[in-house]
Amino acid sequence: MAQLPDKVVSLLEGGHMFWVATASTDGVPNIAIKGSGAVADSEHVYFADLFSKKTRANLEQNPIVAIGIHDAEKHVAVQIKGRATLSDSGSLYDTVVAALKIRAPHLPAPKYVVEIAVESVWDMTAGPNAGNQLA
Image (cartoon, rainbow, N blue to C red):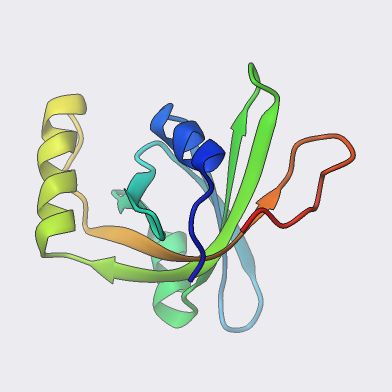
């Protein structure tokens, strides 16, 4: 696993949307926007699975995932690659359910919390460092 660089942690703490890319076992891609993405710890990020039929189906078949995060004001963009685990119970799931009840009480409880074990982090910011591995 890879450690999340500090600049990525601060980007994620800013409440930015995740662009989540998955693929089925036969290679059909899917991309979805998630508003519940956050840092679980120095080697994991997560998002809540509320309405993710295609994303969920793909992750059940193929746990490899890429996440894009962009901050237009700071001109920073990163990609995180890793492996996902879907959980419908446990401490992380309970924490996310409680936080969503406060932040978005009109939404249903998540079906799962998708936790991604970070395998690599890449710079996607326009410029000479684009494509460089950060972690």
